[in-house]
Image (cartoon, rainbow, N blue to C red; front, top):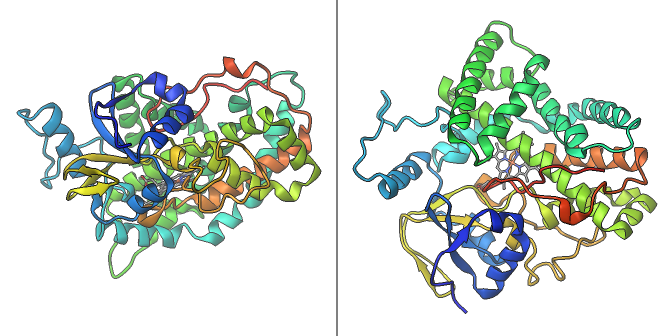
Length: 406
Ligand code: HEM
């Protein structure tokens, strides 16, 4: 079979029932056209081998300026295009980061950031992450029922990322609020307001770090330089924004979705309790089985590309369907079953190719620490509601729960 001829609505019904919908599409054909509520059509690739190939395909671009132009061409071809002083379209102010860039700009930025985001810096965070995890789990101990997202999955990563960057304790709640508003599709005005507030705070924070450098990633980012090349102020703010947004909601929902998988599969939970050496593999299986991203961020075709029998013309948007690829039975037999003893290596939850997740080692470490702590503190944890009462968040990228009573 080839792609559906009519676009498939990518609406809240799709989001609530993601894996079943993606499975239907994956079986029907390798590529389909989805159309979201605002009418923007996107091609989605659903099979593992195609998704992996697509992520490494240099004919697909991510440059934010082109994406902005393509969206304007579709929705408002005659509208005036706001132009900043440097001739770029003025966006939200955070678009100059590497996930929005193609080589050679991407290569330059990623190289600079990798210098500051070192394995040593991540490893140094381990004792702090363990301490934060212990604090949160201890605080949960007195309660008979809590929302696991509120009590644990949200506060852990935001505290870690704020600590890594050197963000003041008093502003952490603001950060949670801002990232929430930026990623949910509910209210464009609230999202713009959050972006503005965040930009202002980050500008102040950078100025403060320049005056009083600390032992944190932000100071390191200010200091990195290569052949006289430094991050510009706009690049720096966009970078911090990317680290906060990419590093927060994803980790929250890896932990949330992962714990849900354990609670819905008590025999897997029992296997982990019996053998905590399985924890690292279990985190990989959580990423594969129900990772926090439905698909990648937007890419666009710079020339026509053929997938199966479908030719996607140049200048169209494409997603690699990570959640669909990670359950493709061709690559992961019985992909719909959660099995902490399987070998899930090669899953695409962190992407693939030049944009492969920079924060993967940190996310893995956080989830492994969280899971070990949970097994030690709450070996008898149970779901506080029937699974059919749980709902997914209204986001078109983040695959996460609204709440998780335990
Ligand atoms: C990129 C997933 C946590 C920083 C990506 C991409 C994916 C991903 C799929 C590629 C997106 C694309 O190609 O469109 C995840 C998941 C996480 C996680 C599943 C947690 C479970 C983190 C953390 C950080 C981080 C903790 C940093 C603190 C980044 C950055 C990029 C990225 C900077 C862009 C890399 C580039 O463009 O070269 N992530 N991420 N992520 N992630 Fe993560």
